[in-house]
Length: 160
Image (tube, rainbow, N blue to C red; front, side):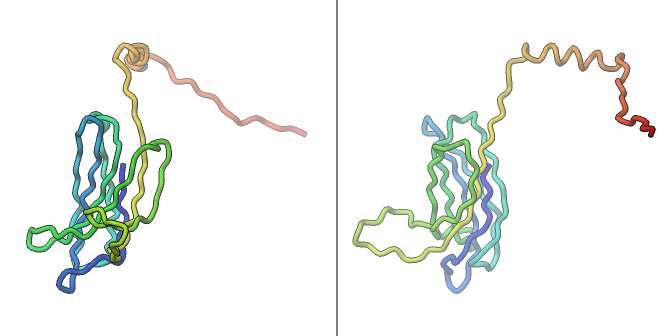
């Protein structure tokens, strides 16, 4: 799950900014999954607070890319992006990231401030076993209407 929290100091286009976030997870075997946030109207510091769920059935996630775009009349003007490697799946993290330009810069080029983006990444893996592992549980559930409930009490009398 990826939660895009908020952005700050985004570039304005013609004096305004209607940002949207494109969240992409790249998997092994050259597969990827892309999801898009709602457009936040007239805000250069939008609060998204949107969560995106991704399925591991496409492979192992190797990289997360979050790009911000200014949505103007159906056209998307690129504002900046963040590339996050997903090599440490055991931790959850919430960080502010500096937006980067789409192309890689050489050492002597100066990068302008594109703004920042706060993202929270949480990795959860649910393992579903084959049906034969659940046979005993299914039998117990199916027999449960005929079983009387067990009750107990923690109350005891105390005398002096």
